[in-house]
Length: 395
Image 1 (cartoon, helix red, strand yellow):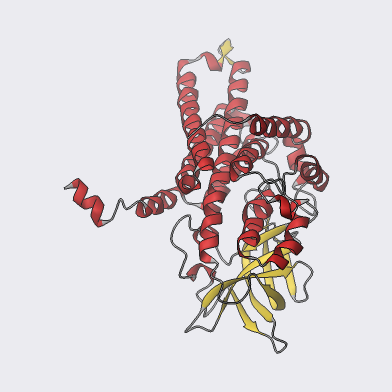
Image 2 (cartoon, rainbow, N blue to C red):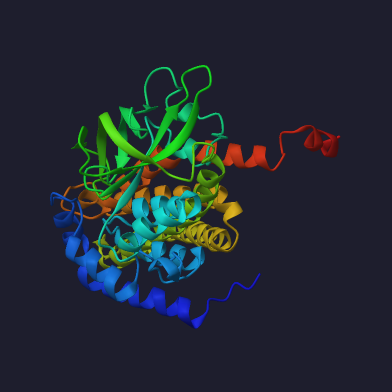
């Protein structure tokens, strides 16, 4: 493994960092989340047009930049540092790779170029709280139970008289669900006895589709309730024999690496803001950062953030380590956000200060993609630490 970044990767990071530093400060973030879309559409369009952010990891044949998931992870680190509200996670990290992996050539040629240009957005619709399980982060989702079980709940798909597919059901926590132009809906088909989960592409303006934006803990990650009442859907893939579970697991590994890098970026920024504050805040006639107890707390936090960064960079090179890197990144972000609130004192927990944005991101990400102990537990199971071989080695 060569841990040194290339000149191109450094340039991607530097350019994105400079642009976000100018146009995505805490006030800009708070203003963007209060718009109907939940993000700054002009800034997202600029990031897509000038930097190719929306299609960074998509093949050039479909309008993308043609970079690897490593470049996308580096971009996510800078996006996390600024807490940028954008369709990046739902569109570029989750939906677009699924289309590239499962779609037919006609579907990829139709759906991917607008996503790569940032003209349209997409999201993955998973019922309930099963997103982490669907992506294979906290367990094996091959049985499809995360999609509703086939009998009740979730989304059901059935053949229409014209030979197409019609979808029924709802999902309550869909990232960017109220604004996405394209929805990839995980739905059960085949009845209860022979139920299986397939992915369907649904247009955002389809008849019978109702979307309601939800109030969320972390406003920078918009979520919506999506209800489908006899909605037309297009099967993603050549036929109904397509099994989406392997593609979902592969996307989950790369998504975990991107989320880990994003968490590290947010943790690093929270730490830097806290260090800058304790150098200025005076108590008993001296800066509080000069007290040994404060130095020790910040030194421990620095080590934790750097360790999480190393894990995230390794996961960008080997997405198989994504779940563990994500667990470490979420731990670091939670610690950094908590210390930021504590060391900022009386202003740290106020609505006007930006510390609460990082604290809410830490809590919301663990609810969406964790919890941390399940990320680590599933990774341990996959590595065979709890299997017979592990017991034999111990003996």
